Length: 303
Image 1 (cartoon, helix red, strand yellow):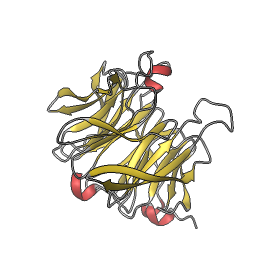
Image 2 (cartoon, rainbow, N blue to C red; image 1 turned 180 degrees about the vertical axis):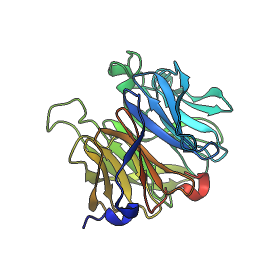
Image 3 (cartoon, rainbow, N blue to C red; image 1 turned 90 degrees about the vertical axis):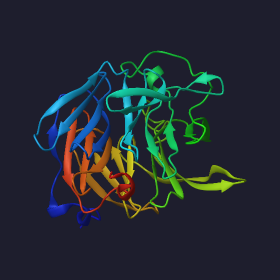
């Protein structure tokens, strides 16, 4: 018996509930409207699926290649824009910039984002939006790296927290926020054996009054494709995207099993009325899977 069997309700398999996208990423559950919102990156639009009506619609188009998003405690949506090279906030239909620069240069193309319990916004900044056709606009790496940043909730300023990952992509905190998991997807678009397809775990510590990430170590490597987007459940298990579905690992890196999905998985999120649904963004749309667990942040932000 697979270790994921007890995590999936009634032996269910993922069911596709929405399609029409070209490359699906950045799913986010919005409890107020019972919708899943996600990015169709290559289509340069944001789509959403209403679980109450079963209807899929375009939330906005011409959005400058948004990618990852999450819901803030006040209900606002924090999302990453490849095209604008920034992290932005959407609230009541109005989109505003949160942060665009660090150390005198623009970001590369913010990719994925989480909000910590203190209100700080953490995001990854690989170069895909300025180097990959269809994911943004051609450009230069202005600060000379690909970092994981933290935006201070008080000052609004960004500070690099992790600088030793080649191409940081997905990220998620452990339930108590003492560990930050970050995926390194530098193997993407490279020959076999070149680059990384792993998730790296860092201890989040306070040193001399400042937040720091220390002790990076490989938690696991994905056997197929890359660990593009990741989520952590209430027990600390890491749910990772891959080319052949969703893989689940313990917080010690033990592989519990794989949930097959017939398309390449870009990202995932927990949601639903009780938080016990997994929504999987895979190539052309969204798949839904009933599960027995919730997101690690459910009690704080409802998914």
